[in-house]
Every structure is written in structure tokens, then in C-alpha cells.
Length: 336
Image (spheres, helix red, strand yellow):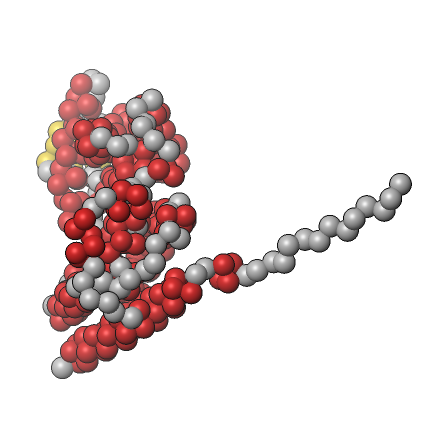
């Protein structure tokens, strides 16, 4: 038999080498601009990271960067079809975001400063990569809003709603009880609907998941609206049922034992069951695969206004340098 011909494997190239020169320049410029913005707004990013890691209400936000990365990866083929072109009007958005961050720092409003820090990064992406690329990445850019820890403002009304549902269900189940605000008195003891029992953690996590599912699995706004409504209403109702169940079980095993049971069941089982029920109920109504989310290059090409909106050409490095200069000016403004 003749000797088998040697098979030469194709030379391996680094992933970065497969990226076009235009994209390499734009990504390097964007990295420089992002680094400048993060360094200037480091205090806000540090506060956010602390909240993500150390406060239970916001632990789920640790997943948001990975979700953004996954959504971006789904659009790589479409992004490869365009040449990034900086969007000059985006510099105004960067200025507004840095102004918001400065206002938050000056007034000691952490939420405002954090929103400004995140918005500045989003605006930098729009500016350096351009309007077309940003439209392709509209969903991951929008998901960046969930990096800002919010929700403390709705804890008091959630406590009241939970207490009202719990007392109604407790009386319905035959347990004598009285209520005073968020305090529920029963034969087994006095129960308080504390901040941790308001259900805000569950609600915020479900809203984040709801936005992701709505824009990756649904096409029609009516279905998106119905699913988002379910992601808001169901967690609130479920939390009321959980509070009632804790009070009801306490009548037989004691308040302390019921409290420990509540944390285990609600933290690991109840939440998972509610999420599974919501997704299971919506499954048959899903209209597309996640890979099909958002707009395509062909769709964008049909929008004549995009060509007019591109405006004057601007080098990516120039855009990044302008953003960095704006960040430095904003930082100096906080020192005055």
C-alpha cells in the first residue's frame, strides 16, 4: 500500500488576529476609554461591587456581566459584517452621564452616582463603536442598567402588601390574629414583616430575568407585557403566601423553628419552584430562539435614516481620547 499522505493541520491563529483591523482599532480605543471612565468613577463601581457581593438582595447582579457577555457573543456574526464607525453625538451622552455621576457624588446620592457611572460606560460604547453596532447590541447595552443596585425604595410598600396578604390568609386558615402595620400577633407569637421578608430580592431578580426572557424569546409586545406583568405580580403574591405559610406552620412547631424552615425553603426551593412555574407556563408561547433576538444587519440596512445619522467621520482613538479628557474634567470637578 502506498504511504498515506501527511495531513498538515491548518496553522492556528490567535483569536484576536482573526478580528479585522477596523475592529481591533475600535476595541482597543474602547478599552482605553472604558478604563479611563472606570478609574475616574472607581468609587461608584466599588460600591456596586460591594453590594453585589455582600448584600443578599443584589447577589443575582453578579450574573449580569455574564449575561451581557453571552448576549454579545450571540451577535458576533452580525457585528463582523459591519465596520465600526464612531458616533460623534454620543459624546454628548457621555457628558450627560458624567454629569449625573458628578451630581450623585456632590449630593452623596449613591444610586445617582452609580447610575451615572454605568451610563457613562454605555455611552462610551455607543460613541466608539458607533450607532449601527450599538443597535445590534441594544439588548446587552440595556441589560447594563441592571448593574445598578436598586430596589430599596420599594421595600416599605412591599412590607405592607406582604403583611396585608399574610393576615388575610392567616385569618382565612382559622388562626386568630391581629395586625398593626407590619406586626402580626398570633397565638404562637408576634411576627414582623421585616425588610428581608418584603420579597424585594425575589422581585428584582424576577424583573431582571423577565426582561432577558421577553427580548430573547418573544417578538410581540403584547406577550412581552403579559410576561413582565407576571414577573412582577407572581413574586409579590408568592411572597405573601410564603409569609402566611411561615405564620401557619409556627402555630404547630413554634416561631423559631418556623423561621429557620422559612429561610431554607424560601431561599432554595420556593424561589426555584416559582421561577420554574413562570418559565414553564410561558414555554409554549415562546416565539424564537435566543440567537434570533434583536435586529440584524439586513434590517438595519433598510433604515435610510441610519446613513444620515452617522454624521462626520471620527477616528476611534480620537473619540477615546475625548472621552478620557471628559472623564478627567469630571473628576477634577468633584474636587472643587
